[in-house]
Length: 147
Image (cartoon, one colour):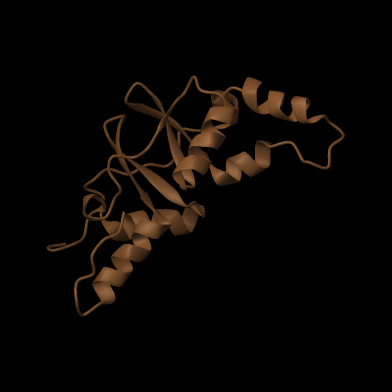
């Protein structure tokens, strides 16, 4: 469709990412420090997975468990990210129409789509980016994009 909005128009680039050989602790700390919820996992520049806040909650030991603080911390320090990440996540390209990306997010009930060229991570599009796009399209005055 002529004039159709593409992922490249609204994606976050570059996407903050983490190496596949990182630990669960490193991934959790990066999520917390950066204030993001979705972290692409890469081997070099090649997308190999995604780690999200939801994954963090699913794989974190419960504080109600009868383990010591040292044991709790050791789980984060010794668990390889590769063991808890989602492998082969749904992805799009910069040229994917926004309506297709939005449909994928809705159908798969996911919060983000890594953006790739080939296997190389070039960005990420999130539900928040989709809301920015919606606001821009509905607003009579162009809105400034906030980082």
